[in-house]
Image (tube, rainbow, N blue to C red; front, top):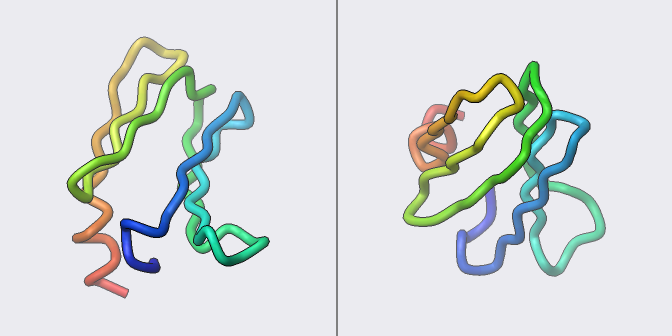
Length: 68
C-alpha cells in the first residue's frame, strides 16, 4: 500500500473497497466483503464500513500492510 496521503478510497454495491494511488490507473489494494457497502471512510490507518446487513466493519489497514 502506498503512502496514505496519496491514496483515494472507493466503495460500491459490488461489495468491494478499493484503494488507489493517485498516480496510478489501477487499484493498489482491494478488500472484499460479503454484503453491499453503503458507506466507507478511511482515516488514521483505519477503514470503517457500513454494510447492508446493518453491521459496521473496522479494519486496521496499517496492520494489514505490515503483515505482507
